[in-house]
Amino acid sequence: MLLVNVNCVIAQTKLTIGSYKNIYDMLKDVPGLEVATNGGKAGSIIIRGISSFKSQQPPLFVVDGTVYGGDIMNINPQDVENISVLKDAASATAYGSQGNSGVIVITTKKGTTITHKPIVETYQKSAYTYFIEHQTKLKIIGYDDNTLIEGVIQKQVDSILVFIKKRKELIIPIRFIKKVEMIPED
Image 1 (tube, helix red, strand yellow):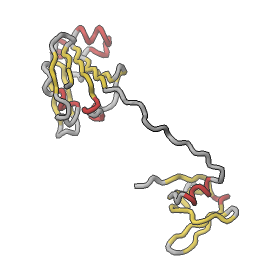
Image 2: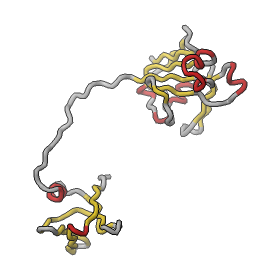
Image 3: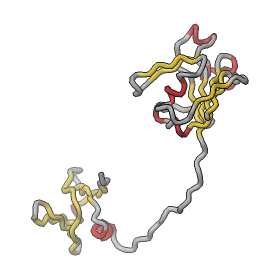
């Protein structure tokens, strides 16, 4: 169960975890809020109170004690532990002029400790040897900032890299390379 505190008073609304697609869906059932969504892609929230008669501004969002400037659609409802809605004097007292249109305070569940430690390797050979051994797809960029080739290095012969392109060997001298970028795997 998720508790939603409204106006920092004893009255609480209990929401059932797992039945909401996004934060806007969670807040639709909270008294004192006007929540409108646009097909689950975006939405708006107005906190009803004395200040909302004058202004239709969205509330300030505070996530885990920090003012949140991002899109609240990016917050997974499964990660939410508690939501508090502050309006009128309570929001202005706590957050000053930023809280004039109300404040929605979201507390997320705390993460668990890492069960496995990250692995750090030391590689003693050249970067090109590493790329060859791991068959890493690369983007090779020349000094004119044009892409010389995208692909996997087949072998390195002295200061030359050999790629296979359309069943033919393509030779790129290392001295012509300005930058090498790894291409993420799909």
